[in-house]
Image (cartoon, rainbow, N blue to C red; front, side, top):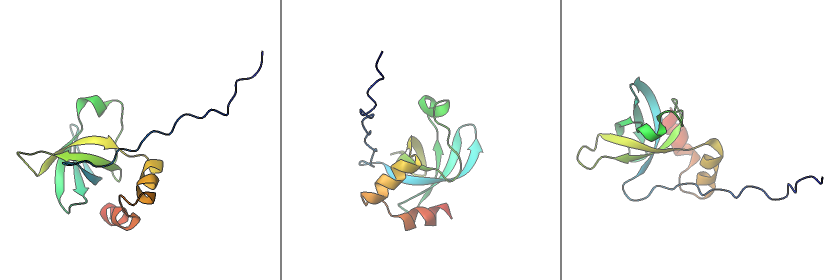
Length: 108
């Protein structure tokens, strides 16, 4: 039986970019009960919650870069939409969506 052709690589998935009403943030502190404090690119600190669809599948820790959607009726709170992996952060920097300096500054 011939070996499988390994030249076909998995197609690279698109990195989600912030749309209207979303902002890139860095996790500052874990509060427990699926709540975290995030520092956002718009200069605000928010309390965010990890939705149920992400709780067991995506592990979030301090220093992670996440995409958050602030609440319309309470702008000091937000929902986590996506957690960026290291290679995805690199792609965002290459595409000039964010800069390395800003991420380092938010991480402290």
